[in-house]
Amino acid sequence: MSRRYLFVLGSARSDGNTELLARRAAEHLPGDVEQQWISLAEHPLPDFADLRHDSDHVRPAEGNVALLLDATLAATDIVIASPLYWYSVSAHTKRYLDHWSGWLRVPGLDFKKAMAGRTLWGVTALAHQEQEVAEPLVGTLNNSAAYMGMRFGGVLLGNGSKPGDVLRDTEALDRARTFFGREAPLARFPYETALV
Ligand SMILES: Cc1cc2nc3c(=O)[nH]c(=O)nc-3n(C[C@H](O)[C@H](O)[C@H](O)COP(=O)(O)O)c2cc1C
Image 1 (cartoon, rainbow, N blue to C red):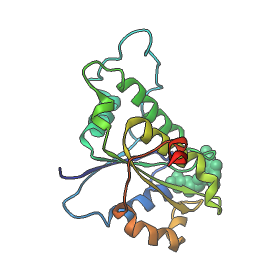
Image 2: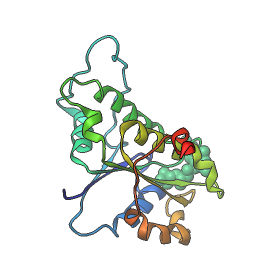
Image 3: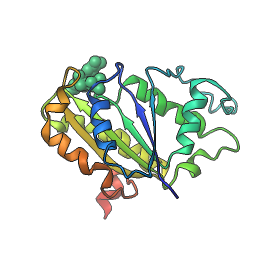
């Protein structure tokens, strides 16, 4: 199956460090890999309404929810490009992931089965120098991939505060070169890894 990468941009501004780093990494994808880039700030999703136990969620037919759902289903690889906000993913990104919970309940969609075996990746920029403060974001993405039966390629981290700062993080730019070439094993919850 040919690869198709969906880059979901979760920053509350355009051309920020997260997007810059993601674009650097994407430059090293093979030429036959398709890329789709969607900014959640430019395509805002409505707040997620939890109807899971009241009625069926229906498949969205139009608007940004339909755009994101169709793009998600069309992708072999989903790249969550979210800045680190309060040590986790941005609100735009979280709302996108919350909508996955609705898509899991759309009759006939079989969203979980469709996503199983696909690959989730993360790219994030953070102002903090010590990267371990991003662990909540890494855990969110790893555990979400594990829940969905997806592969997880890990998170590419870069340092920066104002737009463009990340381009001075030479270690991050080095990691970007090979990031999408790395192994992406099936994601496991931490308690599963601990048993191995
Ligand atoms: C709402 C908000 C929350 C933030 N929280 C954190 C944080 O928890 N840790 C951190 O290191 N930087 C934090 N930052 C700084 C951003 O991660 C940093 O500016 C980053 O470059 C933003 O990414 P962007 O340029 O892609 O928008 C925060 C910034 C904002 C606007």
